[in-house]
Amino acid sequence: MTRVTGLIDSNSLSAEDTSVVIIGAGPAGLTVGNLLRAAGVDCVVLECESREFIERRPRAGVIEEWAVRGLDRRGLASAHLLAAERHTACEFRLAGERHRFPYEELAGSRHHVYPQPLLVTDLMRSYVDERGGDLRCGVRDVRLHDIESERPSISYLCPGTGRRRLLRCAYVAGCDGARGVSRAALPEGRVRIARHDYGIGWLALLAEAPPSADCVLFGVHPDGFAGQMPRSPEVTRYYLQVPPGDDPAAWPDERVWAALRRRLAADGAPPPAEGRLVEKRVLDLHDYVVEPMAVGRLFLAGDAAHLVAPIAAKGMNLALHDAFLLGDALAARLTGADPEGAALGGYSGACLRRVWDYQEFSQWLSEVYHGAAVGDPFRAGTAVARLRRLFTSPRAAAAFAEQYLGTAERY
Ligand code: RFL
Image (cartoon, rainbow, N blue to C red; front, side, top):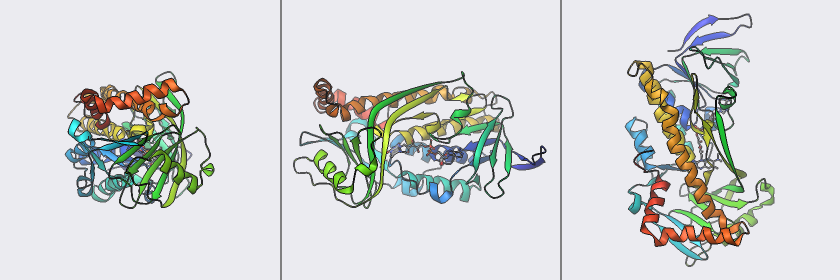
């Protein structure tokens, strides 16, 4: 376990030793923490929010089946996750027509409908309550030191005392999401950060209302994209394409529901069921990728390393993929199963193949969703052709299903 080794300098920094410090208790950080604890490796998870807050934060809603299997193989899939509702199809709506896309038949795989707060709660329970993992919530001003040395350290302000504390470790897992400190701690010139801005906004909405269909809906409309993602029988996520930087206040509830009704309208389809809108915020769609995902003893995972706009519902799946590889590689290195750290050495390359594939798919899908609404008749024509190809070419449909479910055999 973590050992307190006493004071190390005149500022009364109390220093402790542990094997791995994990910054961030999202899906990536908690998965890495669980894998380390299961292997008997000591670690500390530092999180700036409270446990209650992160167990309720609404975000993703679906997990690809390979990721559920990955969790299950590592003893991290709860009975609820394994029994969760599965999605086997999605539906595109275009020019008043409904096109159901039965992806399970094509890819042999499904999505599990399991909102991110439930997964985080499961992982938290397993890490803290079952495995006795060390989680420190509410920490402030986390700083990374000496990440290119063999003994990096992390310091932070303790919420209870307001004092700075120091954790010395062998490895650091930077799992602190898009706004964390890990990425910023990478030494200049050692990584490349590739970024893509879509120039498109999405109004992200959560409604206390049942979904109006049993699957995800994608509305392709000249006014802009609209999406409906069932979360539970009581809660539904909606997205509306809006100008980037738009003010959510410009979208009073009546305007939201009118736009959803119009953009999702199709023959014989019921209108969206209305309910209280409990989240309303504008996302400016963008992606980035950090290459490589590791420098010295700092390994990034999840959104800290790459952001993929929620266009194809990929972010949490990528975070889990990274966490499986990183947790397994760190455990192997620290238990002596992989004394040379070969898996850690291959970590970044192994993650990035899936990351870039998902980024490319999101870009491709973005054009399908948004091309009809950019005001350029040429792009509108090619976007609709892209979509129609899915309903006329079995090979194109199969390729789409494989990318949508992430089932390619090798990346
Ligand atoms: P997270 O979940 O952001 O967790 C990072 C954690 O780090 C903490 N933190 C810090 N802790 C200590 N010190 C600091 N300085 C810190 N700074 C931050 C944070 O409080 C947090 O607890 O990152 P992680 O683990 O990499 O997981 C990534 C996923 O959360 C993300 O990719 C998904 O939510 C993306 N996403 C979706 N992904 C899917 O696979 N399917 C979906 O359907 C889907 N829908 C979505 C989404 C993201 C959305 N937002 C955030 C734009 C829908 C939305 C609206």
